[in-house]
Image 1 (cartoon, rainbow, N blue to C red):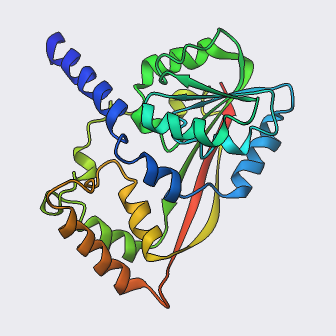
Image 2: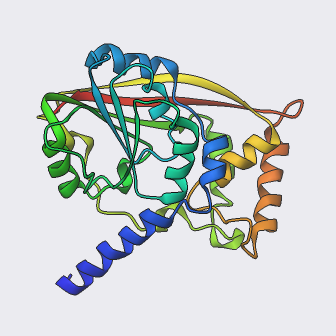
Length: 263
């Protein structure tokens, strides 16, 4: 790949990561799944964060993870590149003096050198360009600082497979595999010689139709309501909901996967 093509690919990623959730922010704030409480407690227990600690929540989105720490530590720096997502985090968390909204990204947080005790990244690590992100993390983290990476996964294979069938161009969606992302690295890349723990915590959600559709529409690759194929997509999602719902709710089983360790 030539240097011009490389530059174009990085620029394309930058544009997409900044704008991918612009039309999704409200749905994301309202319907995205929270993380298992046990995972949050394990972060607190393992890292020893306290009222004197500073956390950088990278790719903080609408503040779903940040909200768990604003009453526990000295500073929560919610670093988010998307203005619509960032504004919703501000709307819900600005009342906490510990909360600081930062217009930045994983590769350029704008935070001071060696100022952070714990870096968190939830549902966002796949958007980061690994090499410059690691350099930036090493710059801002204090000696012996911690990194916690969280993701939520659906455990119900039948529901997941039914939904995958409609995440296609036929229904106005961008197939997830076609979303422009930087070349990834194994999670061990961010830690020192695999010195991190991986733990999983189960949870159950009971989703009404509004919550089922809303959480689906919070994904970057699903069509917005202005898309010409949106009605067809919504009807297909409704078909999946009707297939798996009992008494007007779909019971979904998921788990939070937590990776936590020192740099």
